Length: 125
Image 1 (cartoon, rainbow, N blue to C red):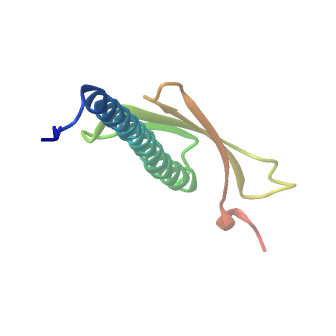
Image 2: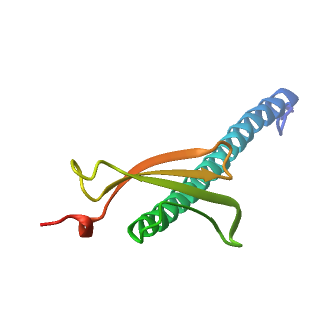
């Protein structure tokens, strides 16, 4: 009568567990990498949102006649704030054109942006 062995050997089980472990390791690494990418994208989106809002407010204030100002973003983003300073360029050469420096605080490092605001109402035709 021939002996018939059924089942797996210990070596086959160890190899299968090693392959499974490597696969789980790769999946966990990609999962944590995607979580880090999500956090980075979320920070960039918040920065973009806050900068757009601060630029809009600064532009409105400059067009209203304010040379400087500051503010925050309310209870939603309590740690973030902005300040702006505007200077009018040479009225003879470029009438109605203002240089605006916007400083954003609350991020890892302070963000400084420069942009122009044009007030066409100051131009005499």
